[in-house]
Length: 162
Ligand SMILES: [Zn+2]
Ligand SMILES: [Zn+2]
Image (cartoon, rainbow, N blue to C red; front, top):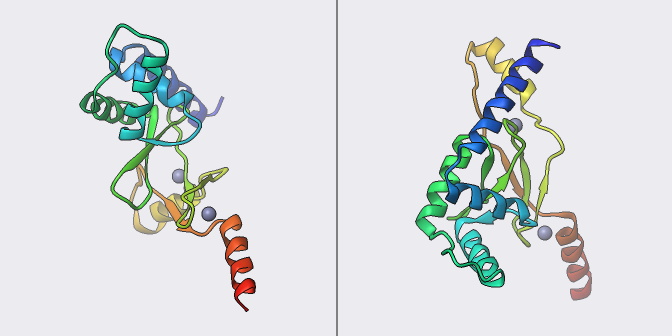
């Protein structure tokens, strides 16, 4: 096992521990987020959790927005959830593999997003370390543009007008 692998598995067991010791509210938020088909804002999450509480006729109250925000913050800090900025006011959240992160291509026209298969910045971080002696500990990258479907739709509309 290489050193990186060892660090990674140590990190993972630490995160599994963190998951167990989460407060009830955060656990509920995490499982609601895990069941969601897409990234959700805190508001979306609150809405979904209220609905599912009603559907299951739960006696307990579904967590309020403040608890949801606090839980999301905690989960993000533990590396279990990633906050994604879509370039608007509200951040979206998604569950990530412990210690991993995702990058997204966000379509400005329809709001759909595509997850990048891999992080393309690891090499860049190495270059920065070599050239600037700067050790990068984290990075954020979301790319905004137009998805293929929207590009096609736009082309069709343009042809129609002619
Ligand atoms: Zn689109
Ligand atoms: Zn990355």
